Amino acid sequence: MFRKTFTVFVFVVLLLGGLTTIFAATPRSGGTLKVAASSLQSLQLYKTAANDITDSQSVIFDTLFILSKDDFKPIPSLAEGWTNPDPLTWVFSIKKGVLFHDDNPVFPKGTRREVTADDVVYSIEFMQKTSTAYTLGPITGVKALDRYTVEITTKTPQPFLVNDPNRLCRMCVIPKEAIDKLGEDGFAKYPIGSGAYKFKSFSPDSGLLLVKNAFYRLPVYLDAVEFVVIPDPLAQSIALQSGEIDVIKHLFNLEMADSFEKNPKFNVVKSGGGSYRGLGFNTTVEPYNNPAVRKALSMLLDIDTAYKAIIGDHGERAYGQVPPWVPFGYDTSLKDLWSYDPPQGLKILAANGFKDQDGDGFLDLNGKPFKIEIKTLAGSQVKALTILATQLREKGINASVLTQDTAVWADDLLKGNTTVFFDYSFAGTTGFHSLFHGSMIGAANTHFYNNPEVNKLLDEALTKVKFDELSSLWKKAQRLVFKDTVGIPLYFEYSYAVASKKVVDFVPPWGGLTLVSTENNVWLNK
Image (cartoon, rainbow, N blue to C red; front, side):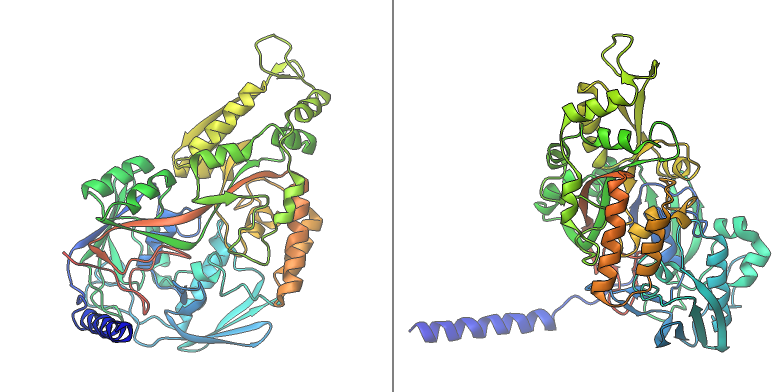
């Protein structure tokens, strides 16, 4: 009897599975996908690593490849494929028949031009020349071997060139004549690419509107994509619930994740990656140029209490910068560098000139009032940082949190106008290099930290293919950085996107936002 019942059950399951396949929804053309953006001050290429800007550029421009939604490995996009014939050489084959957008100030309507290897060469050289947010590494040469073949040569082996979300994956293919005619500033106001959607209009205060590229090499179902600027994460959540927007591609207020998961109107999609959250110091500014002061401040913080109160199960404690999804650098042994020991921390501060001389309950430094202003952008971390600032105040440090617009926050960091800051993102495969290598000062290294020993270890690590060799070098460098307390690791925040159920085939951004590819193609079911 059991066997007969089980057989019938299996038959019904198989039948339903077959019907699901037969009657699966057919992609529907039309509609505008509305995506929340925290800040879109400029569309200029490579001047910032802000997600909203790079995600919008990913929709306008083609890249040689994208990172797979399943395992983050590179898969062809503009490139048909590539080879690595020797450790110093990469050869990319470009798809034929790909066209730049027309009906714009450079290519009048009906004058679409094919993308060629020369465009890829120009775009790589442009990125090398102009980028302050990303690095391609030690590329020594790039040339077109023929109309559809590009060769890149490097000074040393560069195994990360094609599998890191912040390197060649970020390179947007652009037409030289657009830069020649419009200039870099003009091109930022009217970007021209060969992606699935083309530029229509842009306003820093309201957002960006892109329209369907009818001549794209793959089907494009949406009529338009609109990036709607909503700076406050809570306001983004409210806008999604009210139907004002369709997607939050980065859920910064993680406390809302559980609520969205319980709501049948939404899909919550967890990315395989996430972001590093920490406190960073500008190590060139007093008193943060003193490693003892930085270390003492870390000892005053009960980090576990702060992050668990806000993040809960949507993250984990960090002891270094490299996250668990980057296994060659993830190192829980760094836990031995950190301790919650307020008496010892205060003792170290006292030995370095900190004393409450005016009796107001807060420590002064060498007779002058001492204050810490932690600059951050909006997100769940504001609450976590506020708890930490409160802890410091309770121990005699006059600390506060300043929430800034993303563009202002980033600009202050790059210009060295910030002393203590929210250390953000760059938790990809070479994010540690971006944040702490001396060559990245003035770009991603806003700690202004330059340690020749760390630089040497990281330079060597980027040439290693074998896991054990790479891991050993990366971990040595990471231990040196955090032994110096260049920053204070707080936690790794898991990454979530939330979309209305009417949005079909949405993939959370990783190395850019992908709306149309061989892996996914977003459409609206009503």
